[in-house]
Length: 290
Image 1 (tube, helix red, strand yellow):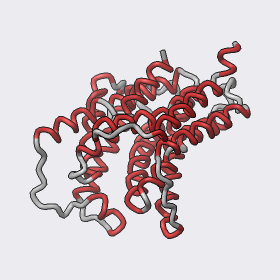
Image 2 (cartoon, helix red, strand yellow; image 1 turned 180 degrees about the vertical axis):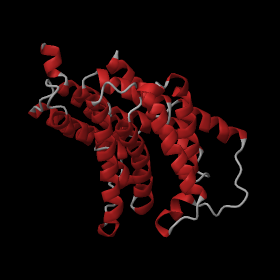
Image 3 (cartoon, rainbow, N blue to C red; image 1 turned 60 degrees about the vertical axis):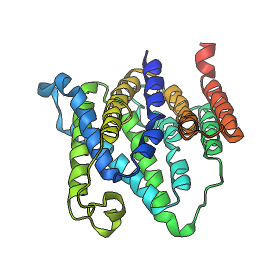
Image 4 (cartoon, rainbow, N blue to C red; image 1 turned 90 degrees about the vertical axis):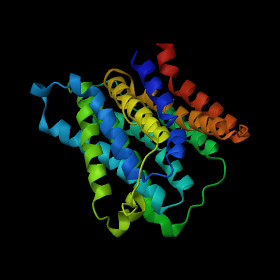
């Protein structure tokens, strides 16, 4: 069941790119803030208020906000294709961080085939990118932000397993806190480094029905419901196996974009799918033997 829920979350995240394309006229911080607040509202009725602890609440909220802020900033300050590719290192980071952060729990030793499968999956993600990313030395800050965003999400994912006693419903408060801060940054006078993201100087910005419906879907899915599924899966499932399945996100996401834009599927996408399939098979070898 945990692996199944993780796959559902990954499939939902695969639709994020299509959704963002349809909301390209809106500032990223506004989109993120509204969607995260909606996603956080989903779990509010199930929050166990008496059992809340300050440290998990602080770490979860900071990770949720930091991941999205760093990722969006990396797309604004570096070549988006290259930044997005570096961002897809987060499944490999999960594989590496799992034995380091879960030493006391045991049963999460890092084997060579785990690393090999992670690298193979990353190759599949790179194949789906298609064109060779334009890495530019002058955009080192954007690339660094992309790597840090990947590390933040990997840390948060493994941290969820480390603190398995924290109820999944607490994700609601992570999303709400991150959403409120995102809207606050959007509404406030933006400094130079955030002006490209916030674009708060757009007077009379209004949303039509289609945009509201898309934001509603983001709250139910990629920036809401998927977080609950992912948190439960990481708490109950095998982090190494789930991380390998995560490499299917760029493959399926690329397929969705091709269908949405009416384009034919490129051979590179099919190659990426084969590499990711091979990575999952390689990483799950011990489970099959057992």
